Length: 295
Image (cartoon, rainbow, N blue to C red; front, side):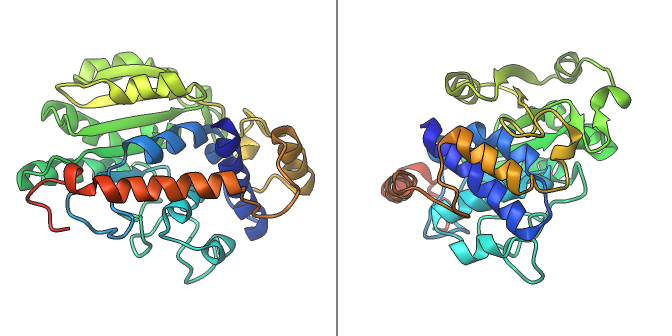
């Protein structure tokens, strides 16, 4: 499993390297969680991206979108040429997610915006009588924004149990350590709002599944402890934000993972695994989508 996760990591890094700009740090830290979320939890139809009964995934820290595009490639929403056009004008893989691209629910970029979007999706799904679930990943920068705090408050107040927030808690912003701007206890803050809070190691698959599996009667937040730029030369450094690893950095990362030094390399194991996953999602779609959905 980790071999395929690491291949997803290097694909994300290759995208940033090829574009000569972007954010490799968050994809490296988030890879295990996003892999498990897409593989085992997101109920979606690979052949109908707009199915009304689908689960919703929103990446509020949109600068991490390279890994979201890799997952959408594996689902068949994008092709390899799209990955190679990362951050190019008019591409389907811009530097922050845009709603025009398949598999992207809303445009995110301004930090915290996706948090509010997810609350809106949650409320709307309940009003429509849908049984889907909304997942929203946000980072330290999103957490610090006023718009997100207002949204957290209303989510907890309404006990939106169809909404799960995932806090990519790596303690690093583009300026440096989060200690520069905050030192509050985030667990106590969410508990005080009325959330169900569960912590998980972002590299531990069992921890991740346990957190996702837990059923809550109110809004759930997973505090996901990750390392920005994990396993790379910029691990735990703010340099993991906003710039490629560089040729040597990519080489060292691929050596560590035992992945060939080929740009955009994807193993047969990863291809075959995701073909099986696509088929499985298609087979199960009649059972997982609400009767009111228009699929």
